[in-house]
Image (cartoon, rainbow, N blue to C red; front, side):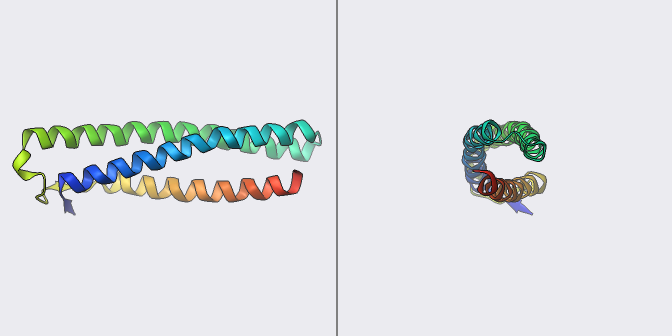
Length: 125
């Protein structure tokens, strides 16, 4: 599906804000995880702590990669706008379904992980 440069630019800005929010949440999660780890020394708890440490590490890497991809997309859109200023509001650029799908997956994964993590915290804090 084709879309306008201006609309795709707004979508990129929204995605960047969303990804930045996720990136700011992870350090808070890690801090809470440290609290649980310090208060609980059982093997079962340590296994779950390690699970979340790994999950947050992977999420952070994924967010960095996605931020990079969205910034590249935004730079491309800005370049298109500079080269073709008369066509900013004309539907002429293919929507990047891959990025859209990745953002949807990321949002769902973050929500599910946050819910699972809060359930874990409620058991041990």
